[in-house]
Image (cartoon, rainbow, N blue to C red):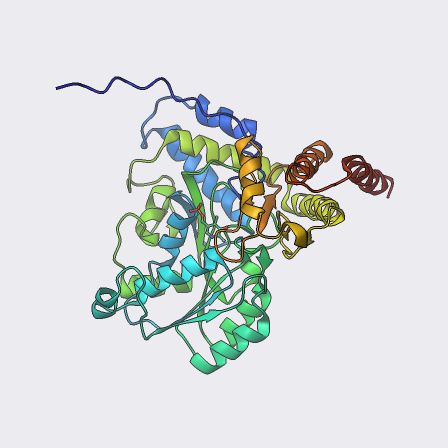
Length: 414
Ligand SMILES: *Cc1c(COP(=O)(O)O)cnc(C)c1O
């Protein structure tokens, strides 16, 4: 018997995280994570940290929902928790306009399937009670689309992604919420990409009963820490009445460790699972950074820097089809069409972490999460222009960067 020799210590390099997420984690968050002491999940400072996080999260999300807390994991963990109240046979209308809302719709189809419907095609079930409205890649879900579908189908649940990161499109959350109220559907929203980037408040959208986001995009924390979720009392009452088939991600049970017990704030949390003091420390620091800066300032910075990036890639001959402010989704100039993957791979090979789209059509995605400075945007623009020239474009990098400089100078003067 030979034993495997230990591999050398794993070294992971630093890259420029210029994709849809994870974003560039703030150095303060990394320090908080690495600096936490060895402490268990019932140690008083860990429990106090969780309670403080809960209160900061309510402010950050703009809500008085008592059931506002973090689900251990990533975006899909929070979404799974949010969708856990959807039970077999429940009627659902889901809007899908890209990769992520497509996976959300799959999750809803799994949850709403009867046993027979699930067994018929377990990895891609088609339950009779779920209608998925497919909106073409590159287009937004509009108020009219939601109104028409909910008026016709009158479902128990309606679902939409606020910002669809696959195609970089903003969907009409106001129209969605209003239609939910009008047709008495309970709205569920994937806010993974919008939270911390757009200046909005959960409580301004009363048609939405459940929200789920992620740690590592707008919130700027680390993946596998905490995915923010928030539920209205109506959601919680519905869930309490029907029950759901999970312990770990059960919205009522999971809230207990965050000191939400029997629908009220408790002085300290009760055991639900082994929480990580490191994750709590990182989440706490990320929330502190976000609240100190303020959402409206952050949202304005995204708008400003995204404009600069979009103008620069447009000047290189690319066509931008997105309208998110943290992400630019683009087509290469027609003569380079079909070479998107090659370009993205060239960039990634040198630590410039841009992304392709994950579903057809193939486009290039460049993100600016926590890259809201002139030097950071200039580096992205310069490296992207260089990558285009490496596949044969003739971008005049000096002109592009001079125009960028002008954009920033004129904004400072204004
Ligand atoms: C990133 C993303 C997800 C998935 O989040 P993970 O953190 O990878 O689990 C889901 N929905 C949207 C809209 C996203 O942008």
